[in-house]
Length: 125
Image (cartoon, rainbow, N blue to C red; front, side):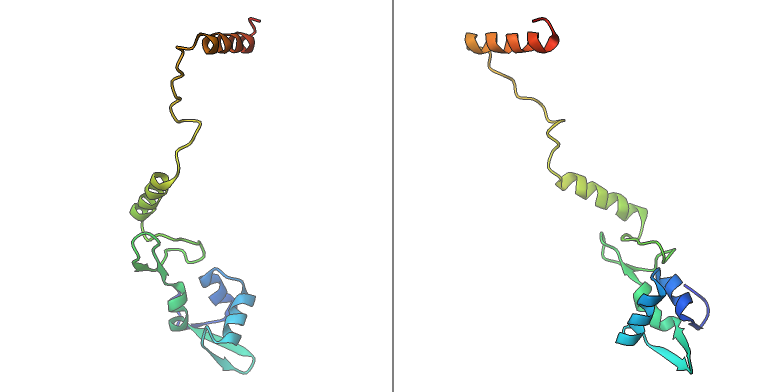
């Protein structure tokens, strides 16, 4: 976060990782409080603090990201790895890597049909 006590709209947009138009819209709707000195707008760092504070999607802790312009959802590498593990665990298994079912070859007609299909696909026609 910036060490200055107040900043311009462009500086606030850079800190938040947003466009200046978005910051101006937030000023107009009252999301961000600012002081006006004629045509100049000054936004205090305290007004931006709730907007730069993020909540980790994994553990729920509140944190300040190292680089506010980069969107981040996790407070640490541990939470990133934990969330990836949970996503992989919850995902349905990939059908291409699933073990194939063993075909019952006790039926002689089925065995002959599968053998002819294998021979055709191998080019031994």
